[in-house]
Amino acid sequence: MKLKSILKFLLLVLLLVLLAATALYYYLSQQSQQPLLITQPQLITLQKGQSARKVLVELEQQHIIGDITGLKILLKLKPQLANFKAGTYELLPGTQVQQLLDLLVSGKEKLFSISLVEGLQWREWAAQLKSQEHLIFNAETDSGIAALISDLPGKSIEGWLLPDTYHFASGTNAFTVISIAHQKMRQYLEEQWHLRALDVPYANSYEGLIMASIIEKETGVASERPRIAGVFVNRLNLNMRLQTDPTVIYGLGPDFDGDIKRKDLRAATPYNTYVIKGLPPTPIAMPGRLAINAAFTPLPTDELYFVAKGDGSHQFSVSLQEHNQAVKQYILNK
Image 1: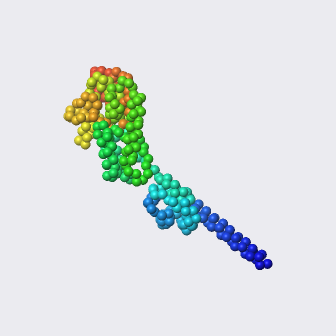
Image 2: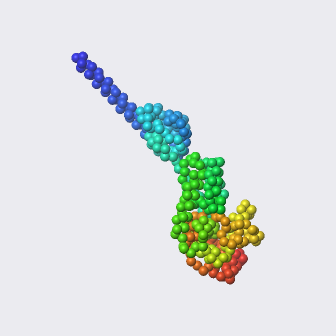
Image 3: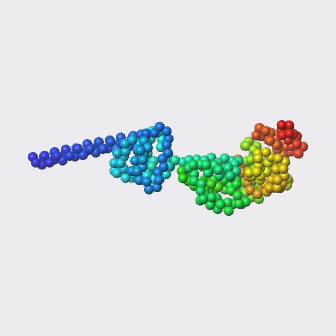
């Protein structure tokens, strides 16, 4: 009888333990499946060394998570869920707490993006990078840029960054983005250099990059770029000055007031292609892929001139007489 009583007692204890374990399991499941208390995307940033418990307390105080009592128990039972990684994360409405824990353990941070547009100058890109709140632009950035420039022909970063959309985590140093853009430009430039037309009059790929930057500034009409490249190549081959306004504007720098005057065309700057022969010493903007393609594979043409028609496109001419007529039609008559 005594043995039976003991067995019954043990079975009762075991049953109670199973019931308690089952209740705990369902309680923890319920806690981990509760949705976040947010109605729109929200960013949170975890600092290095910040404990999982402290993170949960802060999320509860910010009314992002409801009751965290069960979650504290869950983290004790499953300590691997407490290995949160520092970073900035995006929380989305409808996300369950378990999914949040998995996200914080995975370290998959929210990626931000910046689109660096072709045709802009380095100073404009730098201002854009500095204004991006999730990028760091500091003395380390400046020293990285200085080191990069010291190895570049022309000692200028102008033209050396490939226009594109770049993605990064919060707290990334801006020089990381700059370095990636530079490597992408180097790679693309060399690829196109090897695919170039054999008769382009450039001593190296850098001269092609300079030409591409001029093409980029001369037109926003993609279909015209190879044709404009053909005109400029013809002028170089004939030892004619390029006589392109964007180089004049670049040479004037901050002094340019938005209106090119006759005296500007005579200004003796290294970039004024109305004064100098050949290409300017450095690019004048960041050229995109299409402008680079055009520089290395220009359209074969006999044309030597073009003038803006006022609608973004250009009128091309073979002779100076035709060009003067086009200038009269599209410029002087206005």
